[in-house]
Amino acid sequence: MLAYSVRRVLATIPLLLLGTFIVYVLVAISGDPLAKLVTCTTCDQSAFDRIIDLYDLDKPIPERYVNWIVNAVQGDFGPAVSFGSIDAGALVLERAANSARVAVPAFLLIVTIAVALGVYSAVNQYSRLDYTVTGLSFLGISLPTFVFALLLQTIMIWMLEGFGWRPFYVTGMRTVELDGFLEMLRSHVLPVVTLVLVLTASESRFQRAAMLEVINSDYIRTARAKGVPRRRVILRHGLRNALIPMVTIWALDFAALLGGSVVTETIFAWPGLGPLFISAVSQLDLNLTMAIVMLTSLLVITFNLVADLAYGWLDPRIRYE
Amino acid sequence: MSEAAIDAREGITTVSRSFGRQAWDRFRRHRLAMFALVLLALLTLSFIVGPWLSPYAFSDQDFSALNQGPSLAHPFGTDPIGRDLMVRTFIGGRYSLRIALLIAVLTTVIGTVIGAVSGYFGGAIGAAVDQFINLFLIVPSLIILIVLANRYGSGPNAIAVVIALLAWPLIARIVRGSFLQFREQEFVLAARAAGASTRRIMFRHILPNVFGPIVVNATLLIGTAIILESTLGFLGLGVRPPVPTLGNLIAEAKGALQTKPSAALIPGGFIVAITLCANFIGDGLRDALDPTSRRS
Image 1 (cartoon, rainbow over the protein chains, first blue to last red):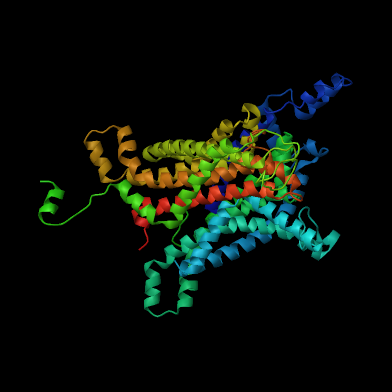
Image 2: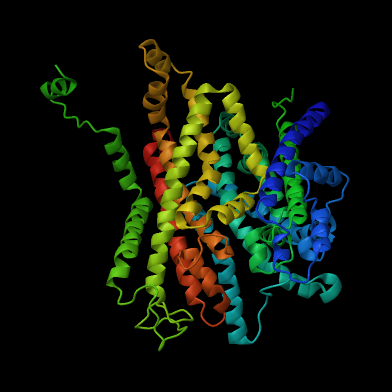
C-alpha cells in the first residue's frame, strides 16, 4: 500500500508539471505587463527596466516557467502584483481558510442529507416519498447556483422590507473573533445553504442508484431469507456496501468545495478563493493565478489518492499491485 | 413464406414494430417526459414567435417607462433604459437555446469520435485520452475560457465552440467504455471475417449499440449547457453584451435586485424551465432507449 501510494504520487508529478505549464503559458501570452507603461509620459527607461527585471521579461517563457517552479517548490510564489505585491502564497492560504469556513460545514451537511435521502428513496423505491425526493433533486440539478443564490437574497430583502429585520446576511463574512458567534452564524448560513442545495441534489441521485444496486443483489436476499431484521439488513449489509462507490464522488466534491466555489462566493461577496481566482485571471496576475492553480490541483490530486486508498481499505477485494 | 404470412395462416396477429417505434411508444408512456417535451416545444415556439408578435424591438427604448416592474404594457417590466424585458427575454432565450444546442451537438460529435477511436484501438491512444481527461482535472476550464475569449472574441458561436472543446471528455468516456466492451463480441468478429473495413465496423456495427447512451447524454447536455452559458454570462465571462442571453439579462438585473427582483427572477425561471425539460426528456429517453433499464 505504501509502495502504491508513493508510485501514485510520483505518477502525478508529470501531470502537475504539464498542467501548471499550460496555465503559465496561457496567462503569460495573454497580456504584456509593459503595455500599461506605454501611455505613461513621465516614465523613463528605468521604469521599463524595472518591470522587465521583475517579470524576467527578457527571458523566454519556458525559462520563466522553470524559474517559477523552482521557487514554487521551495514555497516562494512571488508577489501578487494585483494585490499590492503582497506574498501570493500567503494570500492564497488566507483565502483558502475563508473558503474552508463554508466548505467544511457544507460538505458535512451534503453527505449526511444525501446519504439519508438516497437510502430512504432506494429502500422505498417508487413510493410517494421516492417520487418527491426524485422530483426535488431534478429541480435542484436544474436550478443554476446563481439563480438560487439570488432567490435567497431576494427573500432576505423582502423580509428586511416587510419586518424590518432579516435572519441572515446577504453579503460578506463575519467572524467569531471580530463580531461574535451569532453574527458569524448569520453570515455563514446563506452561502452554506446554497452549496448544500446544489451538491445534495446530484449526490442523493448517485446514492440512490448505488443503494438500489446493492439491495437488489444476492447477498441481501440471503440475509433477508435467513431472517436478519430488516433494519440490520439495510444498515449493516446494504448501506455499508452502498457507501463504497460514493467515496470517489465525496473526495472530488470536497476537493472542489475547498478549492473555492466561484459563483457562490462571488454572489455572497465571500472573501474566498473563488472571487480571488476570477480577479487574478482577469487581471492576468501570473503569480497569483499560479499559486491558486497549484493549491487546487494539489487538492484534487490528494483527495483522488485518498479516495483510491479508502477504496482498498473498505473493499478488501481490491488489491493494489 | 414470410414470418408474417405464417402467423396469418395460423390465425395469430402480430404487429411488427421497428426499434424507433417501440422506443417512441415507451417514451410516450413516460408522462413527465412527454409533458417536458410539450413544454419545451412551447417555450421554443414562444422564443421564435414572441419577438415577432411583440410591438417592441429588443433595443427599442420607451422613455416614459424606465426601470419598471411588470405591467400590462410591459408584462416582464422594463430595464433602466426603458427596453421591454419580455421581448429581451424571448431573444435571450433564442440565443441561450441556440448556444446550448450547438454545444450539445459539437460536444457529442467530438466526444463520440474520440471515444470510439480510443475505445476501439485502445493502447496508446486510449492511455493518451485518459491522461488528457486527468489533465482537465488540473487545468481550470475557466482559465482556458477566459484566455481563449480574450484572443478569439466571445460571440455566441465562439463561446459554444470553447465550451464544447472543454466538455467532450464526459461523452468520450461513455462511448469508450462501450467500445471496449463491444469490440470483443462475436458480431464484430463476424463482420471482420466478412471483410468489413475498420471504419465500417466502428460506425456501422458498433456505434448503433451505443446510440442510446449518446442520445440520452446529448439531451442532458442541453440542460448543462444552458446552466453553464448563463453562469458565465452572469459572471461577465460569457457572450458579450449587447447580445441578450438569459444569463446576461440576469447579470444586468442583479444590481437592482432590491427594487425590481422580477427582472432577474423571470429569466432565471426560464433557465430552470428549459433545464428541467431537458433533464426530464433525457430521463424518459433513458428508459425508452435502454430496454434493460425498464421498470419491472
